[in-house]
Length: 143
Image 1 (cartoon, one colour):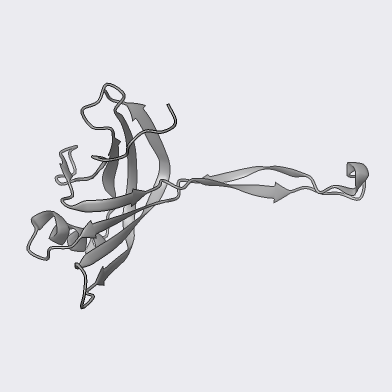
Image 2 (spheres, rainbow, N blue to C red):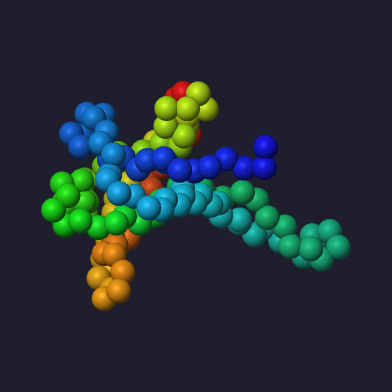
């Protein structure tokens, strides 16, 4: 198979702090987590053939960005405003292929670092939300 349709992927937030995940409504795009790792340079005067050398450094869980068809009256959308304002980190999930035997879930803890709304005169209202991951995101088969 050349590819798998991503339709139906869900972004969820823990609404109670006790593992009660609720899907955010009307999500049109999800990207991430975009993980990265530092490369620590250890080049020395005697490095072979004058090539830079590196060792592995710290890992960064990255970010998850979602775009939603924004409805200010939708409780899952207004909950994101509360997440942005709160001091504590919150648990989130990205559920890939929900209901499919190949379903997988990214679980992570994070904070909303960017919350941007758009109100074009000739298109739908949108909200873009960026969640900075704290710690290690975990991908688990859940299907």
